[in-house]
Image (cartoon, rainbow, N blue to C red; front, side, top):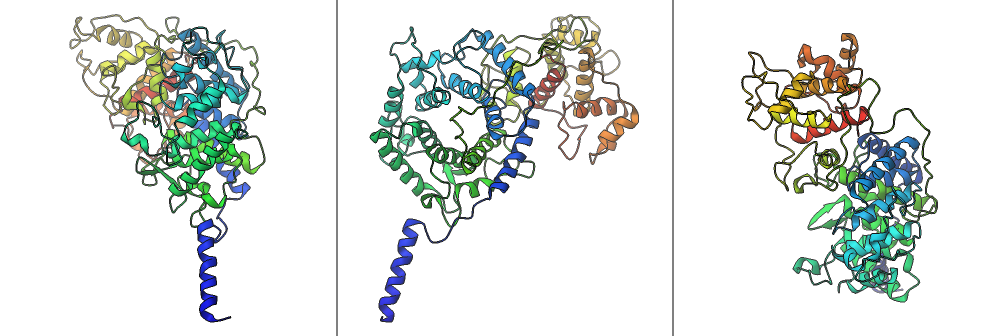
Length: 555
């Protein structure tokens, strides 16, 4: 054979190999390495979300990931969550949201993952709302996508919704997704609808991945199978050279997760040649975002873990592990764990501890669904929303919480008094707190019950900011009122605080309370330094109070 012809044949083979993605095998994690990553992430999640609430962060996704991971979680964890769900649904009278019907879908998926029937939660059928076609699709493609995923987790029948203008069917939701497919083969949130903007004309990997997840069980329909292949081809072209994806111009872990889950739901191997770039699979890319503690970054250049990214990445690697081990996919929940009602205990959840002060009361949910637009990416969102739903804490306005602002002493006195259900009482003790001040009653009660003292000379300094050691002391005082044992011997406090590099800078009067807060998980002991004299933010105070109320069995 002539050398020129031989070179041309070799070149042709190489070109075909590049075209079909078979130049070399993918670098894939072993099942053991993947299981280790899942266990690490599960351990992080269980510690980060000790008391899951109703919400897109610190709630359903953490529960779903843990329930589907195979990680050993005490039944009590899920029982407590279900108790929270029942209280919330009852407070809402079954109406989770007037417009965002994904609120129903997300909760249905979580309940299915722990073996609960979403058709009977505190006497309400949470699937009922999804029988209303028009309201379900109102918020864009997320509506029909998650309605299908939720209903299919346990093959719930489509409920007959008597208030619906248009009674929904599964096929209507399937058809809605298909008719919104873009010309490039993928999907975007409002693409194909009257609300579409110019940016909605280009497919988004997050929405495309979710659409594929919803359509996975309908591959017997030719139109669905065709749309699926077009979407996979589109995503293959959009995948980056390092195996990941970008959304709105930024490479991130969440976009990668949605395609991973989609492939697993479809039964497509993660090392499918279409999704291997430079020997990097989607899973290889996702694992570059995981930190040593098991959490995940949002972007590769991120400065620290992101809770939203951590929760999504967690269930993403859980989906990958389930596929690798030949188990049901993430959303095929016929093999869901079964969580019982729990043993009868003397203390009912939310009713406080024995020994609490008789005036301390658990605050009920009175404003379900309260949230703020500036806490979406806050690691404290779950705590803020849980307190706001009970009117324990409020925002700077209806839309803004201002999570990074410092908290004044008057504001702290207000939220801790609200948190313990104490009645405001203006005691007139402090010269700088006038009876006409909005916080007078809260400062008076906080002082009367021994939670907050003045700064000397008959002054309270209501506009002054609170440092970390001051906040810890006041929270510990509140905890004692709730029946918690806050007493700490000097040597015990020193042993707890000695793990931090700057523990010697903690004031003598704050060492016991500070150690108590770390011991009970009210403060995060994974940080390197205490920074006792640093002013705490509104978000951090909300987290501390939420953690304390959880330990005190008041939430």
